[in-house]
Structure formats: C-alpha cells, structure tokens
Length: 172
Ligand SMILES: C[S@@+](CC[C@H](N)C(=O)[O-])C[C@H]1O[C@@H](n2cnc3c(N)ncnc32)[C@H](O)[C@@H]1O
Image (tube, rainbow, N blue to C red; front, top):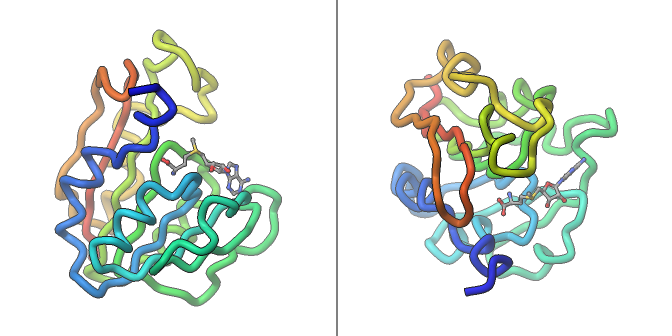
C-alpha cells in the first residue's frame, strides 16, 4: 500500500469509538481534508458536516454537507449556533478553536480527537510545538466539561511512526 493511500485509511481510534455516536446522529468533522472520516461516518448512518478550507474532496460525498471555511483567519466560527451529537478532529490543531469546538457538541455528545503530540519531533513532521499537543493536553482541556472515555499519548508505528495523543470523551 502506498503511503498516501495508508493515510486515507480510517484511524483505528476513530473506528474504535465511532460506536459512541448513535445511528442517525450528527457529526462535525473539523478540518476534514480528504474526507476519510466524513465518508466513514456517513457510510455508517450518521449525518456529517465537514469543514475545511479546501472542500474539493468533500463536495458531493453522499450524506456529507461540506462547508468551505478558513478556520484560522480570524473570521467568525462557521457553525455559529449549530450543535452536533459528535465532533471528530484528526491530524489538525489550532488551539484557539477549542472553545467553539466544545460548544458545538451537545450535552451527552461525543468528542473524538487525535493528533500529533510532543515527542513527534523525533519522527518527522509536524515538529513545530504549535502543531503538537502538550503532555496530557487533551485531558486538561476537556476535564471540566467531559467524561473521558478513553485517552492515549503514545508511539504508533502505523500509518507511519509518530507520537499521537487521542481522546474519546462525552460532554457533561
Ligand atoms: C493533515 S490534514 C487532516 C485531514 C483529516 N482530518 C484527516 O485526518 O484525514 C489537515 C487539514 O486541515 C486543513 N486546514 C489547514 N489549515 C486550515 C484552515 N486555516 N482552515 C481550514 N482548514 C484548514 C487542511 O486543508 C487539511 O485538510
């Protein structure tokens, strides 16, 4: 399998926790990119809103509403007033978005978040601390608003060697 194809595979972490989101539920896929998780949730019976600055891979996916937005240019949160049964964010970190992201999840709703963490510098990109979660950062950020269902901060060897931090949590 070529590396590009491997990166399009559904994250095992997302797959492992997708069952926390009820069938028919709404899922926000933030910085959805090629749409691997938007496609996965839509295929598995959820209604997906996928946001990215580049929606070329997201438009016209069945069951997916694509929203083109720059999430980092200081313009207002593009989903103002919308609340979802779940939010998934993978391989993306822009810390100023955390309050809006958490507010977009209903009480009882699910956050699934996975991205690179401190230590990843040893394996490649990203190596800029702006794009690497600090130790326990997803725990620290969610602790007062979520029940933590599962958390890891660890080395993985697939789809390529990396240090990732990942959480599944339920809004309280
Ligand atoms: C590494 S990709 C991850 C894509 C997807 N979440 C996944 O895991 O397959 C990062 C994504 O963030 C998007 N992105 C980067 N900067 C952005 C911005 N300022 N506003 C919106 N999306 C942005 C990119 O277009 C890209 O699709």
